[in-house]
Image (cartoon, rainbow, N blue to C red):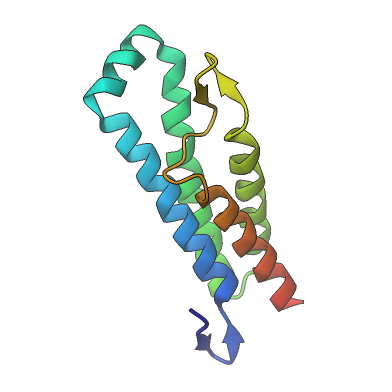
Length: 123
């Protein structure tokens, strides 16, 4: 999992990309399930539960790509996305659904870990 490109360690951005892709898959699968579409027709606030992981997944991938091409603020964007996703999976909407729906409950933690590794290795 550890690779070198131009002599730098890329473990952090690769972990962040993996977590962001899993979060993106969770949002896309959740919004495309017919059962969830029926529930969202009854409770439109649940669209937030499935739109937020898609947005956070794209921002996480963009931040990790920026970190790979040597932009320092890419790691910080990944950390912010990871924190928001970790906090969001513990905030309930309508008692049952979390604010940020995740694929496996580890993907927000992978994003956060990738951002922290990116900052720690870079500095």
